Length: 254
Ligand code: GLP
Image (cartoon, rainbow, N blue to C red; front, side, top):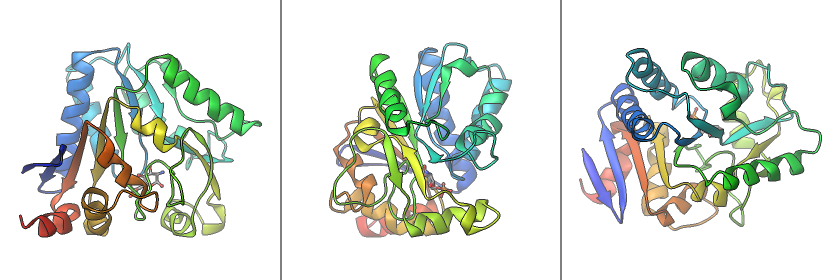
């Protein structure tokens, strides 16, 4: 099902696999149209299926990433880039090493930088210098965070060091040996960095995300629900499975 709500495009797919295929189609199509596309990429469990579909399309010879650039949303801080929970590691394992994107064309905020604020500011400068992100992929946290922009009193502008909330630390502890191993901070693109992308796609799956998805699309635009800022973007597409869309569809009477 395809919906349009106040200028936002919303695809509701049967399940996770169908959502992943639909999302991959948009990403692949974008790179096919312009092989020098600048992708903004996301981690988390949600986009893994999409990345697998992208890899399959590459293996079928449908798409070429030789000129593609990528800028990831975020990274834990501090974290060693070889740590298997780092987002550097995640991106290598789930996407980069399976396609022909050049390692020097991939960028992930540094979790190792000594001067983290400076390295974060330089990250934004690089993005702006190349003319910005063409297609930004997002997941969504249970509390409405995008990247690692947690609910806050104001929307963060640029890339910077952020404190993770207890709820995010506890949600992400499932990937670590123990909750004490989860870094308490991260480096994340700010809301302004995310919003400069020419096109944004947000993926959400499962009933656990149903409430926050409805709030993001229908609710008040507030930094307490960072993803609600997307209502202000002119080219945003949501890829949801039926479980994640349930509350939205009920509220819309669909
Ligand atoms: C992490 C990432 C986000 C991601 C979110 C949801 O905290 N920083 O970019 O969207 O988790 O993750 P999942 O897709 O596993 O639910």
